[in-house]
Length: 114
Image (cartoon, rainbow, N blue to C red):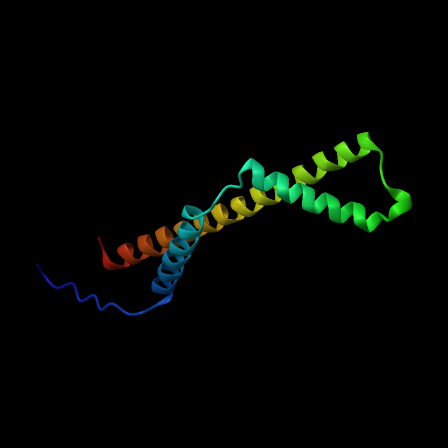
């Protein structure tokens, strides 16, 4: 192989590739170890949050059964929604890490002349 005179230097695209690889590894691990809540855990969380909400209202503002059921469904939707948003955030950050890794790697390969 003929030497090309390429002298690798630690530059901007090395840093971008390293940051991307680090983000990908971290958020990939987070996503891999993500535990979905079971129905029992969701129901426990709903009951706890509903009890806190009802306790904040005071004794004179307690809702009737229909309103309580509607509140229970709202709390359940909030819990499931917050979990979905958190998982989507992790997936998005994993994607950014992969994008940075690919961008840094392509630029490094282009600089090398491959």
